Length: 258
Picture 1 (cartoon, helix red, strand yellow):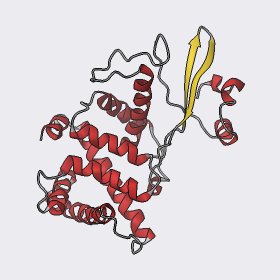
Picture 2: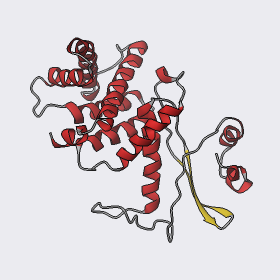
Picture 3: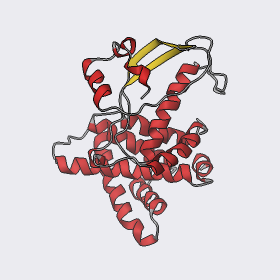
Picture 4: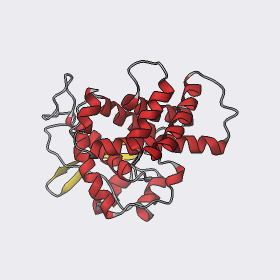
């Protein structure tokens, strides 16, 4: 965390809880530097149909850096405040400030810690995320994961992770979709054919509950321990699938073109 963030003109933007966290617990920040004529200046590197501001592009780059860290180790590392700072010579001023929804890792990952090699892997994954085509299944899956990670409500979060998996592994037609989707996930993630069976069963059970949620069935019979495990399994399958795709040459094109 840069020392200047502890100046009063920046601290005054934060609530009491955030100020205490900054003083006592928070050690790192995600930041990016860039040149722009004004707030909202167009991003010169953007190739999409509709123009977007460079500030939005850099905010997305920070989000993707946060996601890259999670993909390398599903750890509760994230942020919920965003400063936009103007820098003139040695003076810094707040141009804009906003609170954003923080990434929430699954409770099963609570005891994890980041290591240097995790950050080294995340750097490479981040470069790949920044270069992803925006019109393919891989980007849809990445976007769904990011939204899922910021969603605290169980059913919505669970469905978003299954959108990720269906975008990657869903069959072209709806016949025997549960079997075929689960089989594809199993064979993709397994190291050997026997290893695919438990993954297949995990995906099959998860998709069964995904269908119950989608069709509005009551979930009162779903016990808390089982719901925790179901959500963990969906997140685990999605994380491992996307990580493999992003770090294996040729797989991005293969999934985008199938």
